[in-house]
Length: 485
Image (cartoon, rainbow, N blue to C red):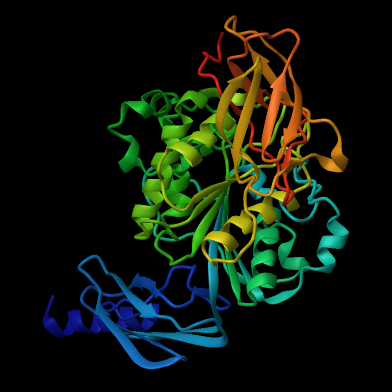
């Protein structure tokens, strides 16, 4: 074939396809789109794809400065844009061989909302899926649900057992009753509280899938050579799934949700993450403290935010959820030495038989309290009483607590419920409990020489100890007895 004929055929191909075979258009992942929120007062990551070696320039409405980089051999490019303090009505322009302009951009506070079904649980009732019964007082909540300066990004379900995806399906939308219907109820309550308190735009990114364990959300880099994950890697390997269990267990393939629903957005600059997950790890609760700690470290590494705040909800009391899973979460909060973590307790917002309680307001509000106190330095209470130490005195146990400096209380001054004590025989009996300032004193006629105490330590229970600020006490035990005894 001669040169002129080859050139003619190439030109014909370009005309037919409408593309330039020598150049690829600059593209952005879906997380960068109209209505998005960028984290304020930081260097926010922006990335995409172009032709290898192509120069890409990013400009913004709030600054005359432009940012330039070249796409690598794989066509990927990434740079960081300095963002101003909170503002509205902005745009971002990305140019290479083509030009992309992102409109209606806000600059404010951006938070991830992640986990399994209780974070996925939507604001509105969805009759097509039985468990999605909607937030308590849904009608009233929807009356306070229109906020132009709160934006929502919902990552659609995407399995990726074979490796990390570069993009996901989703788009930024304005917060209103229609767009909220299938959005996380806890995420919405959290974001609304931040917005009303801080009076700055808020962006919420939801990535959730019900019935999934933490290993689904952890990268394979962390798990593949660690004996901690050996059983899970074997039990939920793709090749072990049969047609009968594939629908149920496909989301539990290790790393599949990290690959499909986290990797595509990992690195999008955020203030922090709120997390509600653990129910699906309760059958292996002995390992959960390590598994969850590894996940937090993994996400922080991939976000390039070493101390990214990570606030999570302790599993609600339920007849199928053992005490060990809540204790594992306690250990991550109190013993892991990780910075910028905290735990919201919902012992008063649970249902003995429904693992998806409709009362999502306490979880969202309490997660927001952690963020407001720690990230935004506001003088607000953020935790209920947490066990600190124990003394034995005259046949009584005297318990001291953190987060109780203004004292302890019960609703309407009713008797304290939920405490048990044991002697050397390791048999626990209900305790009579009385509040003395910031301490609780326990006794029992059946235990003359007490050595250990437990509070709210079981599957489902009713407890009623709070601090003066109205936050519920954290379930705990003082003993180290084998839970299988």
